[in-house]
Length: 414
Image: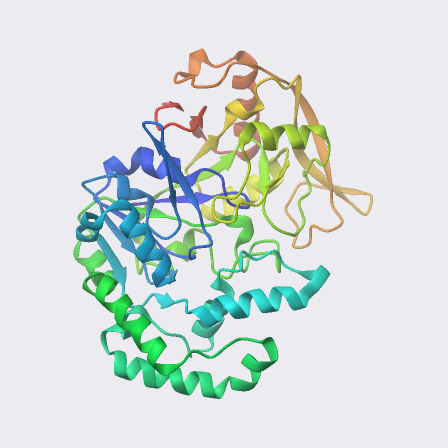
């Protein structure tokens, strides 16, 4: 059985908490795409864990954690996270030999390009994700398995740097010295080499076990189906998770979509339900909406049914989790976007271009004291109505309702 958890908005929905909540039911937890631009926060017994490359299943002592072929790995970040959790984690971690590496020049290129874009900046995290994926697609990338032959890899990179010397000089990116690069590569091999394997084959050999695929970023950041060009550089939807792990579509059992009870976005790009007034500020403050990876304040606004239904359909969601319901405690009224207006006409679908759309809202009665509630019947009646309203509009069962950061602050509906 292979289940998948996927974000339905612009990321930061709280996927890490749900993965951690259900990970005890799985033997293998797989991260299938993205890089250390992703940030999953898990809180257990009051302690906060910020994960960027490690799958969220690392807090389950019985699960094997897999970094799949679709991930781009920055070795220093992965080494840092492993050390934070203790070296014992190495016994339960596998890294795909086909996963591509982020090198320092990818990060430098990412930052230089963003600076050159000026007012047209995408809002990238500057972690080198896009340049690493670009090299992958151009068939000039470096894969983790290549760390096993340092001499061959060093020759390949020397040729790569020479071939791109003019471009590097234009961007002001330094080319590393061969001996310094060799030292880094050897350090990475020493720290990570024993965990680098053919993970696709490993997953195939263990198809009799329960597996959980963990998506990074979210649907509206998908390179093909998101708000292009203000997107990430990988396919973040359900089908991308299969490509990024080597699991066949027929093996996918259940898809759980994750959405906040409101909407947030980090970086630039269209955001129809963004609230630039006091309500948006209040959501940010009450929800502690600052990026796990960047620390940047998130843009905040109301729940968007149109976008959520689009994401649910695109991913084939069987169920949905609504996160951070408690953040809306104390609002007299809450808004929900149920359609868009564009050029004087109303539409109820998610268009390819969002720049000119205006949200059409309905207002619902607010509530208080949903924080830390664990049973459906204990939720305030207006909070129940809010959940049922969204459930009806997106046409998919809302199974999980998060009412706090802790693992057990969750309503699980039958």
